[in-house]
Image 1 (cartoon, rainbow, N blue to C red):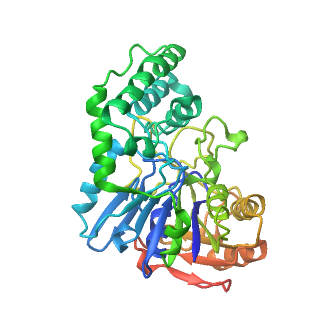
Image 2 (image 1 turned 90 degrees about the vertical axis):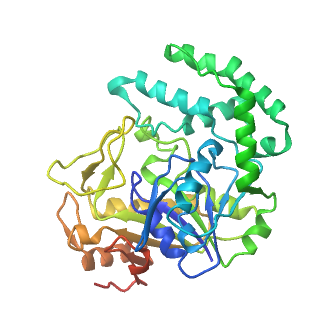
Image 3 (image 1 turned 135 degrees about the vertical axis):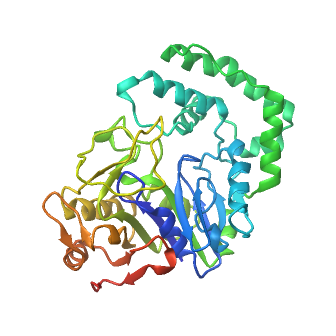
Length: 387
């Protein structure tokens, strides 16, 4: 089976929980295909909890990770994540990757943070992890791919880094009046990148064979539909990647494979962690232990859906606009326990049974219902409303 797990809103919907649930029983591969280490997908087990950034959120269940060519891995941060996961789990970590994936560099994170700081009250809502800058740099002819790091000597990689430092970074510094650049020991940095890759990642150019060797392939998407780069109505408070069905459908289509199910994840209320338009409800105050205040995104905000149709319509439109064939569209509802099995909207709170009935009519074929922090406790409804 081929699944795509997609956030329905501004991110922070519970995608880690959804991937954990989908990987409970099979021999699974999880594809990270958009953004990079800025993702923070929380998975909690009875004996451990971890926030995944570059690893699969199915890692507690033994699922392997694949970085597609559209993912921007951060090799510098990778060891830290692997060591952190090893401290809470005895599951081995296996990462495959496309050699065409471009890496996020320390220059990108530095510029990302300094540029966001320079915006003051006009912040875009960046996570400060450098994904925007890595995308921009790569698109301007200064990309360094995983294939480059694997095939080139540390000296040649350092030469590429020096070129970025001398020719690209000054242009960004000048544009945003940043006081100074980031002067790295390029040889040592190149060595660290090579070490991280050789120690932890296996490159493969044969996606089709890799996919065929697993029972299930799950595309784990970062962020949410309302942050997609194509959302010009919400620009500039969006991400730089495709957060919808575009990447999963495109990647699978290269191998004449069809997606079986698109699993859209949503809380029973809206959240936004980061700058940008949002109709915040100051009276709503939910505990959120993962999304703590930080210098780049400030505090998470809570609100209500404008209507039930605003959520279901966004999902149905994504399938219609970005998948050229029929695919099962599912809704994975999280945080039901926090709202008493109600979906909170500006038109009034809607009981779960009524919401499911409306969603079925709009084209949602299946429901995953979560009332706890654990993927093993999720209930499933195939179009028949359940309580």
